[in-house]
Amino acid sequence: MPFVQRVVEPKYLSKTSLWLEDGKPKIEDQELEAVTNNTLSNALRQLASLLLVAEDIFTDLGNQLREINKRSETLKFRISTVDKKVTNFDPKKVSVRKLENLISLM
Picture 1: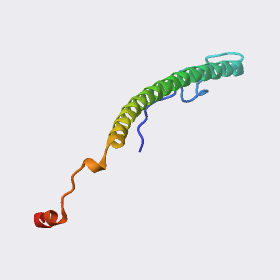
Picture 2: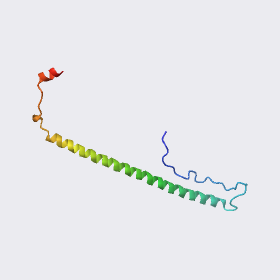
Picture 3: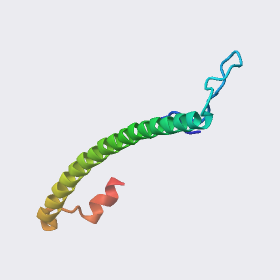
Picture 4: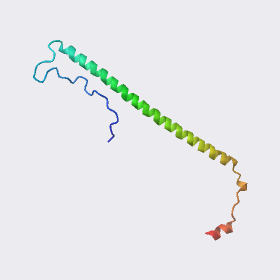
């Protein structure tokens, strides 16, 4: 199961009560407008939260790409070093043991 790394809030945009705890209404008139305003403000809060999550994701992605670039540059240097050694290698200069010596070593 994956771990939750980032959370977007608010989760429920229009989950609000128009009634107080004692049963009296919070708003006497224009209830629909109050619900609409509350939903709109929560949608804006959620978009702001989403923006922060997106910024965090792209920051992490940029850091990972910089690390990959550094590793690939190191690998490129190592490959060029091996390429130079292979290019400069002369197989005629390497001594090869005779077959009799190899059999006696076994």
